Length: 242
Image 1 (cartoon, rainbow, N blue to C red):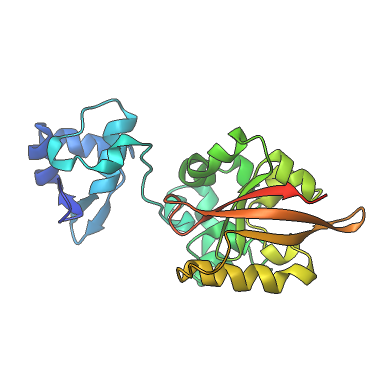
Image 2: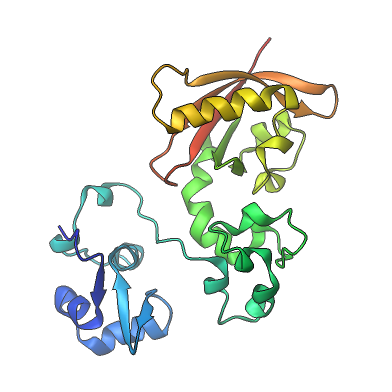
């Protein structure tokens, strides 16, 4: 198993896969294999190489094998302005609050006044390629479900969106203060901080109020489950309290 280094040179990758450097170069030039430059040379992240091999149906060398290969494998997330730098869409990135503040996840800056992207996340090539694959599983859950990280919602299924009287696409990047009622924010933030610190005394379930335009708020029980992927994110499962 390759754990160190986490990046390979073109020559190292070619030897490992039993192909010539030109083959690696063609994958890079066609943007099928994502790399970055160090001086005049390309460096290939191991996780990007594994993603490329698995997504194209090629055998992953035993030297790269790990337990992670048993489940879905996702490519390393790059910043949105890096993804769009060679596209027309990227011409306004330099003016965007995401670029200026180096936000890791662009959709968490949607409410800023200098957010340059005008496309919805549900139709954004970058979001679909790097984020949607990681969180689409929630749409297979029958109960209200959402993914939340760092006080922002990443996505929610139809039933969770209905609880909040929102469209599913509106849930991407919305702050928790726009979902939880003010009476519950202190509880939500306090308990989540404790869970992140590994406090065994805090329950995995919260009884909270979710904002609802019809009657102001709706009481629900929310179960919180830490996810392996996306790293540091939480799966939230809601159940209406009678």
